[in-house]
Image 1 (cartoon, one colour):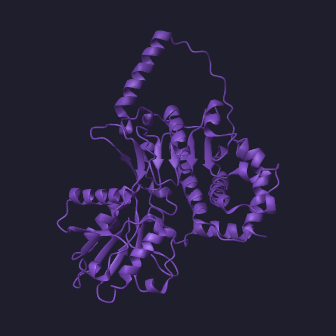
Image 2 (image 1 turned 135 degrees about the vertical axis):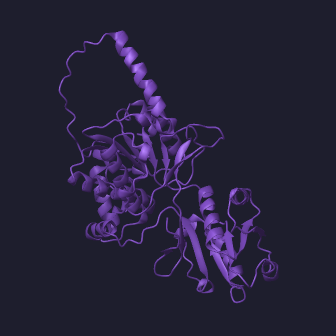
Image 3 (image 1 turned 120 degrees about the horizontal axis):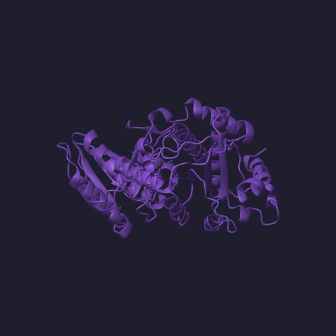
Length: 440
């Protein structure tokens, strides 16, 4: 039976009970003995709270008072958001047209399935959780409605595979209610600032450029770095960031960057003027889309017989296939915060589960859902609600070395605008399997 058909049965069964109504998947005991009446007078109680607040603010990591609080529970409340498009799929009750799910649903569903698999494993280890799963694309149960119905009250962690505008809406909730929000897949801050409870996992393009710059400058002693870009406002901003990183970089090994403005009329002779025969030509290509990326690579492929060339592309290149004959012998690399060679025990467990249940391979979204759910629930269980003071816990690593660092958007800020995963991998494209080049 195909995965989409099995998934359709799964979603049909749980859509009303779990996803739309956001029922709890796992219940932990929340009963506690009745506390005896207090005998402390109100003035003393208020004085004590003021003193606690003063000490808390003084010792608060990153100057965020909540991060100094130790809040541990018998059972933690977790909200998971994924784009499941249930309103679109279930147009006539619980029947799916054609008995198969549309392709646009599978990405969010895989993230949910990966998260669910992690939760099942954690529950078996004795971790007590109340988990609420929400369809981020729901029209009737959207984030504003959930907020109005106080669905976030008591929530200890939000894990979200969402993009704009949902990320901004969830960020507002997280900031107002001081809930850690893990943005799992969106490679953007969405214009968000002033929210130290936001954790961006899929690093921003600017961060990719910083790491790539450092890698190229420090790995190669003798090199010719070319920055190829189109004359568009978006790619010019990437170039400006890349050049600014160069100016800030303190290294005796750094070499100047030569800018090449690309257009379709550029000839082989025009391009060859930037290339050298006696050293590696490290060509950074800022094109994010496949058509433009391949157009530039075709021009560069003509030069590989004469010049030593290495191509470094953008994180969007991870899903591109360079199977054309002209790309066969080219050295092509890209950057990504995610890398999983799928040889470890966790990967084999996930892969075996998907093969057994769905008769298919898990997508990268399933691995992301598993990794982040496992990592942050472990953090909750060990350190409590505010684990932010020691957020990069190597012993809880699954596939990637997560490296969340505070980001201050304005000079002089004392409180982070958000935290961003600064771990970026340099990955080489191969026919059989991609290979990680740097080791962070």
